[in-house]
Length: 356
Image: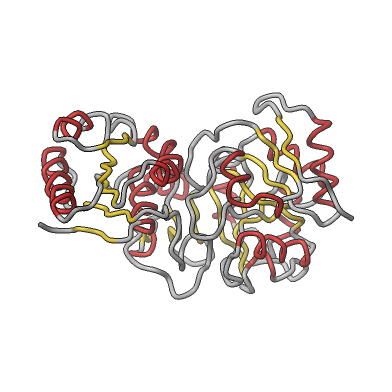
């Protein structure tokens, strides 16, 4: 069955269910729907339709061993995709769902391998967005959905980002405006004795420890310093989030004076080599670079790093429109939401400067 490629505007708080019913029909008939969550836009298909899930990989040009997240709207659906739900998972679910937290559990044998990248585990979450929850409920199936962008590109935080990347590879885009958090969900593997952070996100490590009552392992891959050999969850194995323009991350410390000095030094070096340099800074330091004649784009304020997270992908897309040959970016502290920001920037960067 074929569908007209179109974009449907829906209210983020009180969406028009007639539009979502049309989207649910697309899902039930094996099509692809891009839809908003509170984190980023996802590219969704029926989790139990292997052929439909294959279309996700084709549309995104995504490696087949890179799993999707399965999105659910109820605990009954969790039991459909998970072989069992351990007690520690219920502690997370009671405190954090619906919300930007994904858990990795052993998958049900009835769930096809396509949405899990061929693994015997499944990454699953209940999103906190009315459009997403209504879509899943009306589709009457859990929805497999990675971010709705071309593989390796910055994730989409608006419907237009989806359209720009995927075009007519998507049957329908539900447009509910800009997403709230702007970075993907936190992913935690709770199959072992000690929970392991696989991808940082809006739900912080400190919050995870409080909810679980346990320590949480944080690997170098989760920090963004290394690629995992096996992708147990999205964002672990391959380069992600990258703009087309060369991005140089200046990761030499967190003191604002050090950050400003190091970033200026690196920008000067590239400008001296004849590059057209754009500086990605923060509200606190933007004027310093502008006074030195640099084009500047602000991530947001260090006083509230959630503003930086929300702007992250839109800025990484915007830099490609500004005519720079090199983008030099400030860094942030690896704490709270800052860990998620740095994970994305380290994976997006073409080069990282760690010392001068």
